[in-house]
Image 1 (cartoon, rainbow over the protein chains, first blue to last red):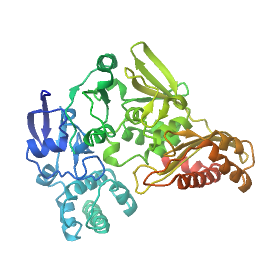
Image 2: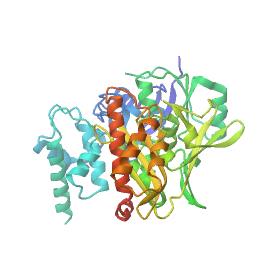
Image 3: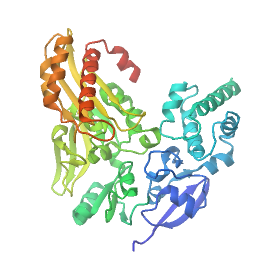
Length: 161
Length: 294
């Protein structure tokens, strides 16, 4: 029996202290220990992107980071990004453009898109597709997702103009 | 799937890490960014007794340029290389290749040392190290040693590292002014593992190519320098006959494998296509290409 390890981290602006088994990955920790089930698990080996979360400000695969490695880190999940309103316009654009159907990929997709839009103010469709190439969607065929991202880009640039 | 149980230890120095490796031997695995190791753990392809997490050894995350050498710490992340002005300016081949490595979420976390020590034959970076004539800096119980990239990669997931040794960094000669490079790979999806790829570096003068290093990856069990093919084009005016000659020589250089992505015949064909594109790219003006990276 492996002894649990004590970790302290910030999750969506809240202090969290916990004991975790070293083998527990961050996505399981968020879902099973903290009840933050907006982070989804698809493949659990880094291919599908459904478990995308922010770690110290950058997007990572939640299934490829061990919870013990997140000791001392700042984690943001889809719940945090939704509650803060940071991506409210993007979520609205996803609804308007039918950029989700079953919704399984959507939390990871939204977090990945938001990283791109923080880095680039006016990405091309090709750049959007490339940035999202690590996030699988089995419903939409991606076209509507790219449309929703473009619509958000236009709206944000218009609002800033 | 979930990883099987393991112990976890997080050393704060290279010395501490190598003594832990010596203590635990084959039962230990080193984790850095974990972007190759954690999938293997989750799939239970690996079940170590203990993970030694070197990710918090801050002194191993750097990129520096001095005395004609670019030095990169083992914990420099792919995203660090991607955003580095030093890499864009002094090792443009690596700057281009890094855009092909996985996806943004993985590049934010994966490290160059982890990638090289993992030695996946389909990975871009080991081949780049061969094309660039890089040297691996290794720390072990008896101190530091240096191993040329061409002698570091031994087979599938197999390197010259002993069980009690740690890859701590690498040294790449600054790319000489006027030197040219080529990088391309074929894959099913952006960021996926390549089906066949080529990293190349050469000096080009008056339409002829010298000191050409052709490093193929995803063809056979380890990255391979195609020396026979390179010899065929050396100091020749580049044209269809010379390229065809070099393409034929690839059969002597490469040992393409079969898998679910491609047959060995298809891989050899793709290697020839890459060679042709590489040669015509190398003899063209590359000023635009270098500028685009900066």
